[in-house]
Image (cartoon, rainbow, N blue to C red; front, top):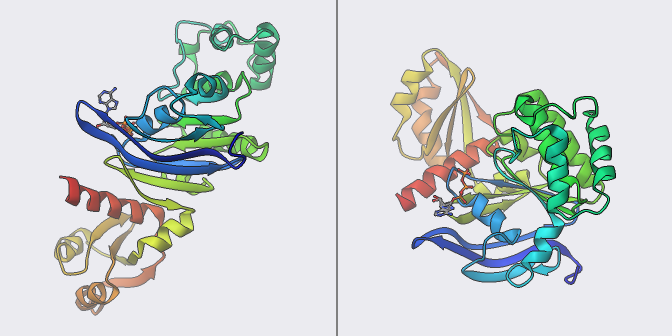
Length: 309
Ligand SMILES: Nc1ncnc2c1ncn2[C@@H]1O[C@H](COP(=O)(O)OP(=O)(O)OP(=O)(O)O)[C@@H](O)[C@H]1O
């Protein structure tokens, strides 16, 4: 890699579609062997960012490198060397498992195709089922097959766009174990997700809203930077309590969490003043809670809607 340091190193990437800004001045640095999470609501620009990084979309402005190659001038090299798993797995449902892998190996122009596909089938434990149509596999197996397909050419960078959407929790956990193994082998992974548990499994993460990167860092740093203060309350008829709390000074959000409500704000004193009346009510039990990523991201989503709506 020419920059010798970052696997992804881009500055000020922007992209508009029909005059509407989809990604606004994205700057991002990702280290080798790092699992970097991309979070944000639907339409926030995650896919567009990933496509600019792997050379499928040309940025309107900005510059940088991916795997040491220029994201504007050397896109052919980048495309050859990244593994890109698109949303909905991009498998051909009416081709067999073996044919899907073979097709991908052909796309990458691999010379030792047969051997590579056979090895991949064996690693997946799908040799016996290689003639089965990909469309008949379960969601978890489709996902494993798609990951195997984008790993055939041994990329050093994986770009995974919502790889676990609609997959059951066991398959998601297995998938993340696999991702961590790959990262331990030095493969860098950029992964977009809507799942908070997955966000917590990333080494670092970024949150996008309306095309702009609002925050980034480790999960702990992101929570600490947000300055959010959260109280958790237990008791009966929390739904009525929520109605009474909504809109009071200092209360920015009220979110049900199982049998509790999380009541959060940024101004500790104002928040405390607003909830103090209800703290005296013996029907409720209040404790200061450790805010999680979900509290922070809900808050960010609300803020960005305030700004952009
Ligand atoms: N090819 C395109 N033509 C026109 N508009 C597009 C195109 N691709 C993306 N957009 C728009 O750009 C914005 C960002 O979309 P993008 O798909 O990057 O978001 P996302 O964060 O990946 O969303 P999701 O979580 O739903 O996948 C959206 O408003 C989307 O409609």
